[in-house]
Image 1 (cartoon, rainbow, N blue to C red):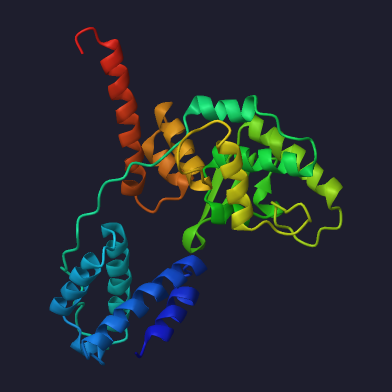
Image 2 (image 1 turned 180 degrees about the vertical axis):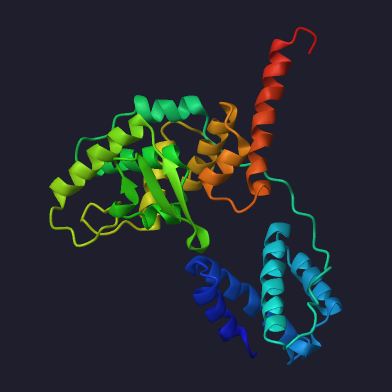
Length: 294
């Protein structure tokens, strides 16, 4: 159907959405257009709230998770808003459509003592790969950056003098994260090993493969998964889990929620507030164990 391709260009060049988000939008919108075909709808002007609700019911009947349905409706709402912007529609038929309630999932995180064990006692080899792997873990835990942000981190983003790292987050929003002495030590060690192993590297991407090429997401995921498995029994062992661990540790040690929001690069506080549930659970357990009448 018309306008979808121009919508993608709008998201990519004007809104600066990431390639991953663009792919997700395409999957969701193509699925909706197939639904429209099955309903013999060929014009966006004929899309109604009732029709969208039927799609929600169909998704639910197909066993699609509520969180995924929310994402699909969000993508559809964005597209229909774009059609209003282009004066194709006068109103958004997706507004007011009720979707299944999302279950509240608490972030999975690694306990502080387990992260301490990994960084303080687990041996890493002294070759380039070992130094790089420890740097990856320390950098993730020391900054809370996303996997995509780490993959795209450049040498010019690290300022040893100011002891800060500039991170380019979602929608090209830049934020500055300070780093502590332990991370500073690992930065110096890794950059020295990088220069020694690949003095003629033709890229300024910080994280490199063992062959001197820019690291890719799956490599970093494998490094994190392998090393978290040495200290933790949690099912999910990903870079995002270390991001959750970073935020939870800060909150447990009294950091201001707004400060954590800025460090994580969240656009609104509600995305950060989910970490307070983990802290409350910890506080609740301590209370039950410590209070004589609990």
